[in-house]
Each structure stands twice: as C-alpha cells, then as structure tokens.
Length: 389
Image 1: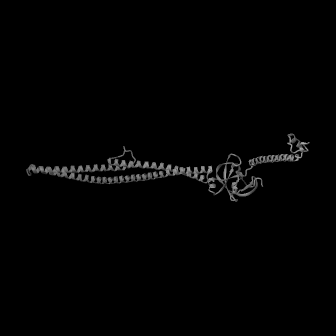
Image 2: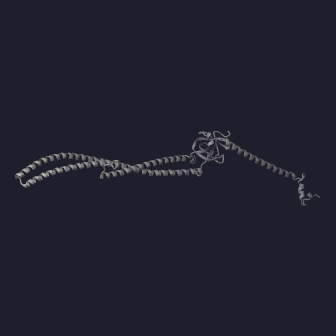
Image 3: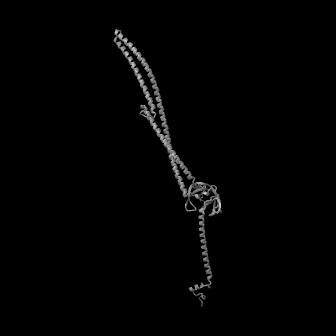
C-alpha cells in the first residue's frame, strides 16, 4: 500500500523531496513564484542601476555645463537675521557712533574757536585803544611842550628887557644914592632902603631866569614823555626805547595784550586746523555710511529691489536690460521672467550655489515679471535659455 494513498499516515521527510520531482503537482506554482521573484529582483536592480547611472551622468553633465557656462546668476533672498545683514548693520552702527563722536568733538572745538576769536578781537581792540590813547596823550604833551617853548622864548625876551632896564635903573639909582648920601641930602636909612630896592630888582632877574629854566625843563620832560608814550606801543627793544614809569606801565599792559592776542591767534589756528581735519574725517565717514546704506543687501532687505549675485567670470554677459530666464527642470523648459535694471556697485563675497565655496562678484538689480517667484530658484540665466530650450 502506498504511503500517499492513506492520508491518515504521517508524511515522512523524504516524501517532501519526492513531491518536488518533475511529476509532482506542486512544481508549476513554485517555479512561477521563484521566477517572478528573480525577475522582480532583476528589474529593480536594473532600475536602480539605471537611476544611479542617470544621476551620475546628470551630475557630470551639470558640472561640465556650469564649468563652461558663463550666463548663470544666483538670486539672493535676504532676511533680517542673515549674518551678512547683521554684520552690515553692526558696522553701520559702529561707524555712525564714531561719526557722532567726531561731531561732538567738533562742536567742542567750535566753542574753543569762537572763544579764541573773541579773545583775539578783544585783545586787538584793547591794543588799538592803548595805541590811540598813547598817541593822543603824546600829541597833547607835544602841544604843551610847544606852548612852553613859545612861553620860554617870550620869557627870554622879557627877561632880557627887564635885565637891561634893571641894570640901567640900578646904575642910575646907585650913583644918585651915592651922591645924595655923600652930600648929606639923604639919611643912612634911606640909603640902605635904596640899596635894598636895587637888590630886589636883581632878585627879580634871578626869578625870571629860574622860571625860564623851569619852562625849559618842563619842555624837555614833555618831549621825553611824548617819545616814551609813542615807544610804549611799539615793539622796540626796551633797552633802547625812551621809557618812564608811566610808559612802562602802559607798555606792560600793551605787551600783556599782545601776548594774549598772539596766544588767541595760535589757538584759533590750531582749532581751525583740527576742525579742518575733523571735517575731512566726518566727510569720509559720510561717504562710508553712504556706501554701507546703499548696500544691495540692505536694499533687498527693505523690499525695494530684487537682487542676484554674478561672479566676476560671468560679468561679460551682464548688461543693463539683459533678459533673465528661469528654468523649471534644471536647464530645460525655460521661460523669460524679467531683465537686469542695473549693476550695483560694491564687491560682495557669496557662497556659490554651483561650487561649495565663496565666490567674489557683484550684485545685480533685477526686475521680475512673475511676482518675484523666480527669485526662489537656485540659478537664473541671462540673454537666452542655457540649452536654447
């Protein structure tokens, strides 16, 4: 009796092997299942390998394409927390603070300059007043000296006339007194009184001579005083200048004023030089702040413009009005999205979307027609589609 004929009898292990024989009824299903699995494995492997090859070819093609392509630009999206924006704002704040510090120093310097100008003007006015006063006093003393000279001349004439008249009168009177006294016509007392009168007449001549000497001395003193007053307001050597006590005081005041004026002039010149230097420094800060405030990053952050980065090697294809294209599938299915408005000044360094390194270049101001959606693409192309597709 066959083992397979009795279903109640357990199947031995060797019976399973017999079922796999060619005549076994289970063979077709197993073979089909195995064949399907193998086919699926091969198909999946082929697809995966094909995708890997396509990816490798696409990567190599992209690398080679961008190695020779010079028409790509990279749109730049800027946020307030962007490291470059934060650094730029910090630089603006720092430079503005330094500029304000210079303006504060300039304001203090302006006060010192005005004070020096006032002291200089006051000192010069004082010197002019002292000079005018000294000259007026010198002119007055010169006029008085001339009057004394005229009076002395007149006194000399009068003294000469009085002396002559006195001499003649004394001679006649003395002879008359002698004759009268000798002849007994007069008493001794009258004779003595007559001699006394003659002595008084001689004393009068001495008084006139003394007055003439005083007038001459006063005239000479007036001349010295006038010369001393004039020399007191001149920058002469004090050892050779005709000075007196009053003129020395005047000269002291005059020299003190001259020193104050000279000091004020030096301070004014120093303040003017420093002020000019500060003005140049402030002008440089103004230029620097203008450049920083006109940075493309800040303009883009304010929403005023859309910007894109172009490396230096691609500048040959950049012109104002150049057409800008955006592609949906990398370098395929491209469309016109706008144009270049202008090339912005100022070098920037941006992480390249093509190579993993920073590249130097310029920023472009773009005018996009699709509401700015193309600015979200990794790269855009200039003048025409990259593969003319």
